Length: 219
Image 1 (tube, one colour):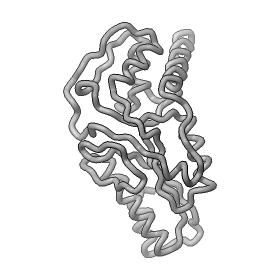
Image 2 (cartoon, rainbow, N blue to C red):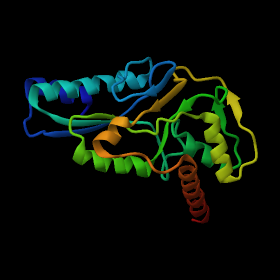
Image 3 (spheres, rainbow, N blue to C red):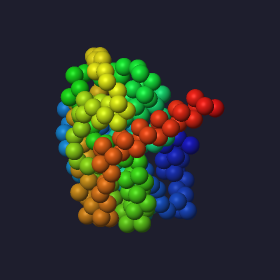
């Protein structure tokens, strides 16, 4: 059931058996953005704001009207083994596969655009922790550290042994320049902080993709 129908149906027919809702949303900030705090909203020009901002407000409304328990987890750029390297998102996996195949990765813009990257194991641990300790909270999950596209390229290049430079293309419309998520509230409420460093996480991701390619080639 779509989000809109889920909530609209329950305005006329509330379902008391629904007690807990866990929601994960992306956060991308405004056009220039920066370090996003837990209290910051999702307002901005990108598609993610249109999709996720109403969701958070509906949850707040339903807690007020019906006592709905919810927890919102705002994700950074999550990466790691099994990430799809064939889509538009997931730059670590995309770069890793391209480099392992000898293809030349593309950086959109000059490489200075930044994001906050958290390894999948840390996000899984956050979900398990927040299920028990964060009722009614809206929490950022991130390092709070901006990481540039070029730094990602260099880290993946080191892990793969790739020797070439990237190619550059114009910035895509709707892209945010800089965003990172400050997880101070998550730490205060649950004690959660990410643990896997960027370099370690990228190495583990590259090793998984390398092994997957080897298995595919031998099958």
